[in-house]
Image (cartoon, rainbow, N blue to C red; front, side, top):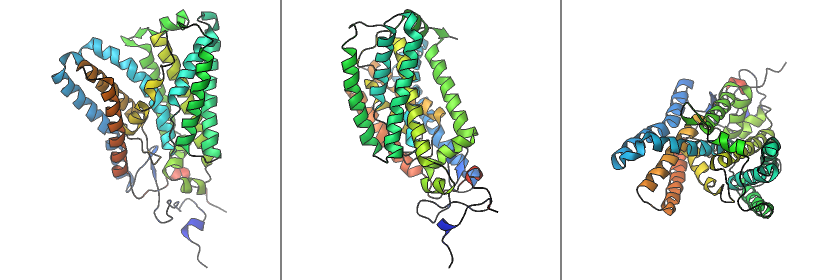
Length: 364
């Protein structure tokens, strides 16, 4: 009896099946695209370039409405805030690429900041240990999220929401034992205000992380496998890729990024409070989807996510200069998420092909 396409072994000349068992699938340069390789690549490039076009348009329109918004002093004040959002949004984007979502970002950022204060005690002598503890705790929390979602197959939204709520309670309890005006160690505060080439050092850290993650996603086999897990889990499984392992890795890496964001943000503001992470619930989701990350998984560009973070941060600053209330900014972020999800669904390819890097070797 003739076997179905799903049951046939894969080799160098066989393509994996899609989720419905009928359409072939492909990964193009670290992301997923349909049709011929050139057409798929061009479509992806346009998907990721759209946010930069929107950013230029915002700068032009904002300059006409509020000319002082384009002053160098204002731009230098906005860019560090965009850097913190970029790092958090990168973590969210990595989770979205594996068909998950993370609502524990504010709690992890706040916990990392609080551990930095508590372990260091505001002293330079305890700074190194405080940074290590904060980052390890953030990665461990990402591991918990990853195991619950990737291994136990629980709903990512519910899991991360619950973990975030528990963390908020733990952080509040821990913070009650610290002085009300706790500050980061002086050397970290000085470093957080340092500028290189006229730009805050946190911007350079964010740029380095964007380049590093982009390189891994686009130029390594691990990165291509990672994209395949979100683009087509069934085809990735047939190709021998461990889906839970990559989903767990996504949450762990995301948790580490949130921890880095919490430390950088604490160094920048010097006296972080329990509200330090509150701004990172909706904004990272908005930056991820506006940067072209597909909610259905597989597609994402860290460079485009950075552009989306710049867009949202400058938009928020522009609204403040216009005297518009913060509540309206939340509405704008909600609209941005809705528009990003809508555009993501409209531009997603229908037919996908599995790239050569994901095919099994020929059976002998």
